[in-house]
Length: 215
Length: 215
Image 1: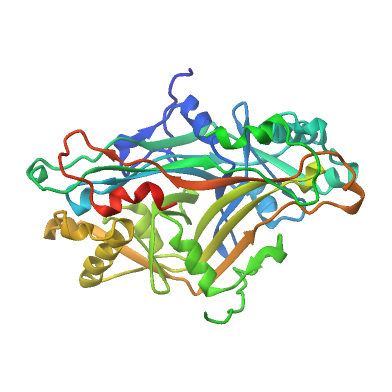
Image 2 (image 1 turned 90 degrees about the horizontal axis):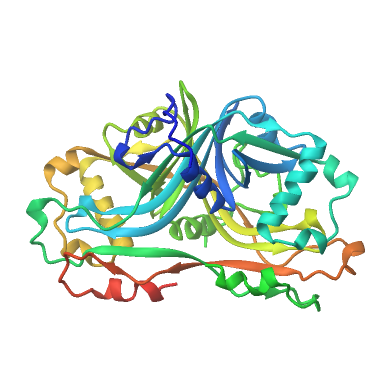
């Protein structure tokens, strides 16, 4: 585990600073638990917050899209903020204002860079491997035309800050006598039973059969 | 159900326009399924993407925070973009580039406005009612000091666009002979068993007992 790195002007957490963590291993864990991120950037119309699929390799977060995407063009020309949030539960306290939520979030600041063609092919294969291990060998890979129409960008995880809250409520001493149920109402990120396409007669491979039990 | 409203310059979907819906009932349904949103805005440090709890009443999305929050101050001084995304599944196709995800997302553009003190009290009670019906009567409500330190903002759902994808893969005709399993690997948004705080001896009310079965 790497040592913590100091927060920048952009990543220093002001609100709920007690929940802030500047720890590369935690950044990676929160990214790895996600299939998509939200990206903030600006253009002549103002600020935009766009959800997009993402994956991690090393200390970079990757995204991809069509060459014509206005977001991808903007992201190469300005710094952006990438945020991933996992909501883990509602926390019910004895006073209304001490109610809160349990969550794990990461905010990543920096400039996206385009990867070259060889790296694009390699990283898209890695993305597939992340989604469905072994599937690259089963499907038709991208052809020259598909790769030429696609852009892969990556952003370093260097300037990043996590916020994490877990556990039960923190009530004020004078409220401890209030006779309300207190605790956490958790969310669990389950996987449902695979839905085989009606046109498909192929037996489900291991990564499909094991999907619903991956938790 | 209201009729669709036309997209603005900001909400007209360019990428995957076939998945775009400008339908107020769908905007409300996607917001109601969420406990948090991501908000994009800018300041002297550039663009930020901040997750925060949200709830809906009528055709407004509400958020709250401390008076001192730099985000809340910025949101009253500039237009913002609020995005909610529910990831419903991975879609596995016969070619790598036809893999996609099923999701429901909404992007809302506009200016947040602060609500007055009476509306703040009413809307925070409504937020609690949304989280845990009946709980307002069981806990200590906010006192004058807590309310005075808190700001509630709302943004109209008027300028909003949804994107929704569901169903199985759409493969190209020439790939239909590829012998790969195809279909959807769903995510289900489950609720876990309530975790009673160790210091709590109060029996769980109905909204806690029914939590895990709410689905």
